[in-house]
Image (cartoon, rainbow, N blue to C red):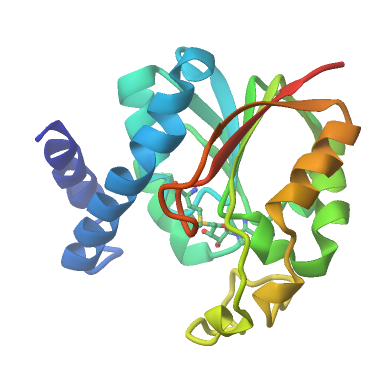
Length: 212
Ligand SMILES: C[S@@+](CC[C@H](N)C(=O)[O-])C[C@H]1O[C@@H](n2cnc3c(N)ncnc32)[C@H](O)[C@@H]1O
C-alpha cells in the first residue's frame, strides 16, 4: 500500500515524460522484485548512508530508498537520456552522468551499486570494473547479476539501443558471476553476503566489502 502511494507520487512527477500505465507497471514490478532482495537484505550497510549507482535507470528504487532508509544516491550513471530525464525528476538531488567516462573527479562513497549492469559490459567487463573502481572508492559494492546461459536471450533486445553503449550483441560474451567474484576478491573485495537461487535471472545479489 505504501509502495502504491509512493509510485502514484512518482507518476505525478513524471507524467509529461512517460506512459503512466507502463511506468506504474514497471515501477510495481521493480519494487516487488528488487526491494527486499537488494535493499532490505542490505539494510545494515545502507541505512543513513551515501551511495553511487552505476546503471541507475529511472531511479525509482533510489527515491524509495531515500524515503525508507535515508540512503542518499549522490551520483547516478545512465547512458539513456530518456531514463536520465525521468531520474532527474524522481531523484532531483542526484548528479547524473551518461557513463563513468564522463566523470572527471573521483568520488568517495559508502556503497557502489551495479545492478544488472555487468552484462552490458560484454567482454570488456574487467576493464570497465577497473575504470569504475579507479574513479570511485567505497566500503561496499552491491552487484545484482545473472549469468546468461543462452545467447538467444539477447534476441528480443534491440542491440542498437542508446544504453547498449559498448555494442554488446550476445550475452554469452558477458561475465559469469563466479568470474566476477574471483576478480573482485583478488582485488581485496571480500564477498560478505549473497542472495541467490530464487530466480536466476533477477534475484542474485552479491555484497562485497573493501578489505583494504
Ligand atoms: C537492469 S538496469 C538497472 C536497474 C535499476 N538500477 C534498479 O533499480 O534495479 C541496468 C541499467 O544500466 C544501464 N547501463 C547500460 N550500460 C551502462 C554503462 N556503460 N554505464 C552505466 N549504465 C549503463 C542501462 O541503461 C540500464 O538502465
